[in-house]
Amino acid sequence: MRYDVIEIMTRLREQSHRVVILSNTNRLHQNYWPSHYTEIAAFSDFLYLSQDLVMRKPDLVIYKYVLQSEGFAAENAIFFDDIEENVAAAAQFGIKSWHVSDKNTVAKYFANYDFSIPAKQ
Image 1: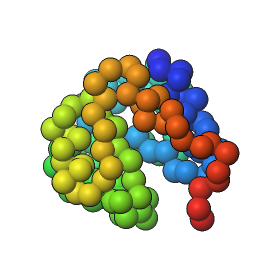
Image 2: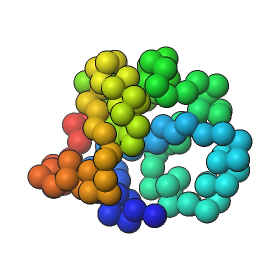
Image 3: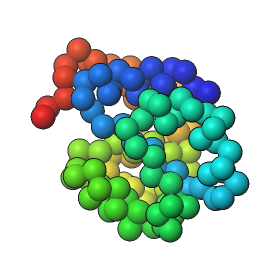
Image 4: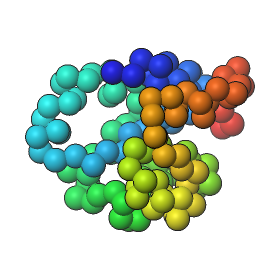
């Protein structure tokens, strides 16, 4: 478990930012990880799981679905993924996208973020 990322998620949510997870899953993963990684569900606002959505990254329709469900424009979203093809697809849709190439990627992205400023309502 990446507790540094959990801390970032917590701080973002404290500022009233929505933090959602979009994950390609299969039945095995869907039955396993929610019960073994309860922090993910506890520290995010919603889990979008491909198994439930019958859509998968990198298909553009899944990014559109999440944005519409959340009520956000693509330019107001940030997407992190460890698969470059998924990052490229999200970027093609207009989402600010970052390839997670190592365990420090997310922390580096937020290193200069001012967590004292609340989200705009």
